[in-house]
Amino acid sequence: MHPFYRGLKLGILGGGQLGRMLIQSAVDFNVHIGILDPSAEAPCKPYAHEFTQGSLTDYDTVYAFGKNYDVLSIEIENVNTEALEALQAEGKQVYPDPKTIRMIQNKVKQKQFYEKHNIPTSAFYTVENKEDVISHAALFPMVQKTAEAGYDGRGVQILRSEADLDKAFDAPGMLEELVDIDKEIAVLAARNPKGEMAIFSLVEMVFDPVHNLVDYLLAPARITESQKEKALQISRDLLSRLSYVGIMAIEMFVTKSGEILVNEVAPRPHNSGHHTIRACMTSQYEQHLRAILGLPLGNPEQICPAAMVNMLGAAGHQGPAIYKNIDQILKIPGVFPHIYGKAMTKPQRKMGHITILDKNKELLLEKIEMVKGLIDVVSE
Ligand code: ADP
Image 1 (cartoon, rainbow, N blue to C red):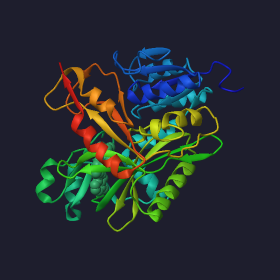
Image 2: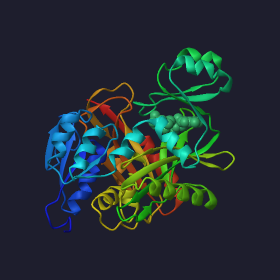
Image 3: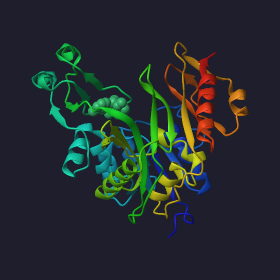
């Protein structure tokens, strides 16, 4: 029977902003959503049909939650995959597959998967501890990554020379060749259980050259046709080899010599796909729902060039959030704030994002600078 007509219940592990935007799409499809999240103040809480407060990594909690739903999915990958496997064995539909989620949770296993399946990625050497790192010192400069629990820059560091050995992590992981990066791009690709695929136009992360942090995202990415073709081919290959179901964000490097290398993937909607809500025929969230519910995928075509700027908590501010200059931001045509509803701001916390649209790419760049100058998330 069709999911639209049988009161299907979807359970999502994680109740952050990605889940919240997934709920927005689920409303259009009249899908009943339950959310599991450890925080009583999760951004999804006011909008979910059911909200369960609990750990995402505890077997019993995830299992008990999953029992209540027909289809299960995630908005964060740090979840208990054993419980999801048990639920899958009992006939629940779990997408993406728990085995894939488990592989992705571990950066080393991800790299080994790419190597085994000839998916282009930088060279790497596995290490168990700091001593191992020291024994590879002849290979420096390298990027050290811990296998697990690395998230948003934690557990990743560049070791340039033997002088950096002191700060090496004493944990299992790997050393990766330091890639000579020209651009960082992301591909948002979806696959449904029938094997149909749809890929959004590529996204470019534009870095602030002074702080070396992502400044804004631009879609479509400014890369050559042949680089684009390579990136699309790699993405299709990756999704089919995994028999993947759902949306996946594939982060890639375009090297100075024009090669495309996979850095890492996220098995869920992603920060780099927020613009799709406004700029594409189908959003990444609706696409994820279509994929996991076994529906035909939506047209991913981009209607208008777009940029996305994160609204990050200002330095030195911690406490109840105030969003300054919103009226001025809203006055700019084609500019759309999305506020995540987190009560408390803190430095660098993702409090919202702003999508910026303009058919004229020069004007788009001008508007990005205007918006960046206005964003200010402070505390009371
Ligand atoms: P995280 O999971 O913390 O996001 P990533 O693996 O994406 O970690 O690395 C974070 C950033 O570090 C990347 O966006 C890139 O700028 C840089 N980086 C990661 N791996 C390499 C590499 N092999 N060579 C050069 N830079 C790298």
